[in-house]
Length: 355
Image (cartoon, rainbow, N blue to C red; front, side, top):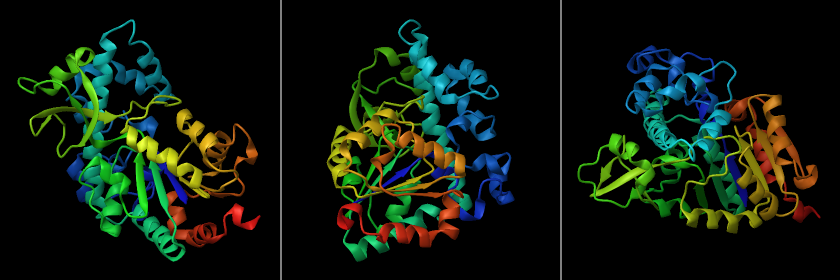
C-alpha cells in the first residue's frame, strides 16, 4: 500500500502555471480585489495575512480581531501563538468565543480562497496529474492507496472526483473510493459538527457567543454552503482544527481514524508532499503502526524543508525508513521535472520483497 501525505505546501504550490511568485491572470486577481498572489492557498504562517479576501472574512467574525495584530507580527510562528491563546481558555472564558470565531473564519476564508483559486486554474492542478501517475501504477500493480491530508481545502477531493469518477456525497464516502481512501485528520472547509439544539433564533454570531455552553456533537456532515449555519433543520459548527504547534487534535470521524490505523501496517511506501511532519499524534501512529522500513520519498520546496520533514519523521530513529529520496523543487517541480523519479520510486519492489 502507498501512503501519500499532503501538507500546506501541496495546496500552496498546486498549479503548475502559477508557481509561487508567478502572477495570475489580471481578471481573476481583480475579482478578488487585490494582489494576484492573494488568491494562492496560504501556508500556516499566512492564514491571517493582510489580504483583502482574508480581511473581508475576518470582519464577518470580529470576536477574534484583537488577536490579529499578534498573529501578523513579523517573524511570529502562528501555530505557536494559537497554541498560547488556546491554553488561556481555562482562565479567560472569552477565548472560547475567539477560537470559535477563528474556526468560522478558516472555514469561510479558505472556502472563498479556493473558489477564486479554482477560477484561476480551471481544474488543471498538480493534484490531478499526481493522481493519474499513481493510478497508472496502482492499476498495473493491483495496489491500494491511502491519502492523508492536513489541509482544509477540497482540492484533493475534486481531483479524485474528476479523475476517478467517484462522488463524495457523505463523510463515509471518503473511505469507499475503490482502491483509495482519503483521511482528513484536521477536518475540511465543507465539514460541520452537528449542534444538539433547535436552530430557531440562532445566527453564526450567537453560536460564537454561546460556544462554551453549546453541546457540539461528534457527528460530522458535509455542508453545502458558507458560512455554515443551518442545513436540513440542524445547526452546524465548522469541523476544522485550530492550527496549533505540535497539533494533536484530530477533527474527523472516529471511523476514519480507525481506518487509518488499520491501513498503516500494510504500507510499504510513503510519499510526502509539502508536509513539515509536525503533527505529533500522527507521527506516533506512524512510529508504532507502520511496518519496518517502508520506502520514503519527500517532496518539498527546498532542501531545508525536505531536511525538516526527514528530521521530524526520524526523530525516534533514522533507520525507521529504508530508502529516502528528496524532491526539492516543490509539488510543481515533481510534476514538471521528476515524474520519472516518482515512477521509479513507486515501481521499486518494497523492502520486504527484496529481503
